[in-house]
Image 1: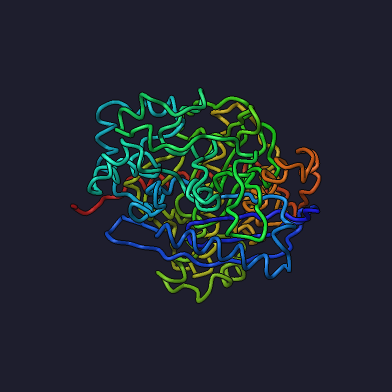
Image 2: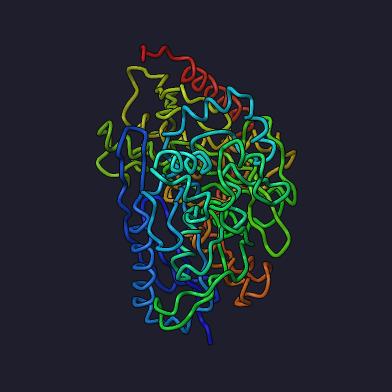
Length: 499
């Protein structure tokens, strides 16, 4: 009898494998770091073969650590770094070139030309996305234009494009299936989220031949069996979702108005909006949350570029702390930030501002300001940026949020989570199992094969670790938030040196 689910979480900096049991408990974990390749300023690449070897390696390692055979695995679920673009040869399975990572900005000039042509609103209305190098479509065009012979090979059907989920399913199935799920498709700038299909008009604007695209499948459903040479049994691949959508599902945010925030390098806040996408007046993103059977559900998404990375900067850039573990006790050594505000716009500001020219600023310094005040202001910047996003989301969607579920490394910081609840004005809830991305992939896969019977059963498995209730009076919240907004305005208005 199949006793476990194997979740593969292929992230930006590492490949991870987690084995879950029927109670949602973690049976074994294995992880391997991924090499970051920076060929030019603003360019970020991964080796697709290293993505594959690291992911299959940690899968084998997790099985070994757990003492579990492939025969005991009911299904595999995949959660992946989104928008990262891979192209490979169908006949040989060899990559065309390195994968272009979601952080890569090489297509910025092309995106500006598209917006100057006036097609930005068309892309936004059909895809729910803004025209930006972040997404896969312009990365794919760059590959087809810049790699000799690539465009001709793509048009003749010799090449396959996919985000990382597609690449992993192709390799796991021995080249039998070329697919992506609806959540990942919705992050490409090529997918019409209203019709649920690749959009011919958008393909034409970007010059993408249909022959290169994967089939779009449900996020929960058996799509392939693993190749016979990989494991001692052929395991169904039955769950696929982009990492943030997987985390939303793993947090059991299955109904409109439920929201989660992941505090990683950046912060990613998703609000479930129901069976139809919303139109944002704040340039937030509308995205497919998941497709289960014939039902597609949607979410609003706001991305904060610098979240936990601000703590790394205090350590590596400023030398204010020696390790990231020092940040909480240092910040807790003062009652508040002493009027200091830190806007970490190191690479501009993301949602809802979308200002690439904003730059980081620390303001409100006085002779009594200490390193503890700066540390506290850095932590508070994550909470304030989250408020910016959630307030815009609620205004766009007309949906109130009763609580915010949280995950990611910085969500372990009690001081930050309490301040987040205070300044947000709603409870912040941290789950017992923090690896919600892998858990979401496992839930999607397990539901597809009957390992779990329905969403009600998996929802019953979700448990909170701690609930942080807001304690700050409403007038104090508004005073603090107004000061933050003033600091953001200053970050946007700084004089910049000539290029």
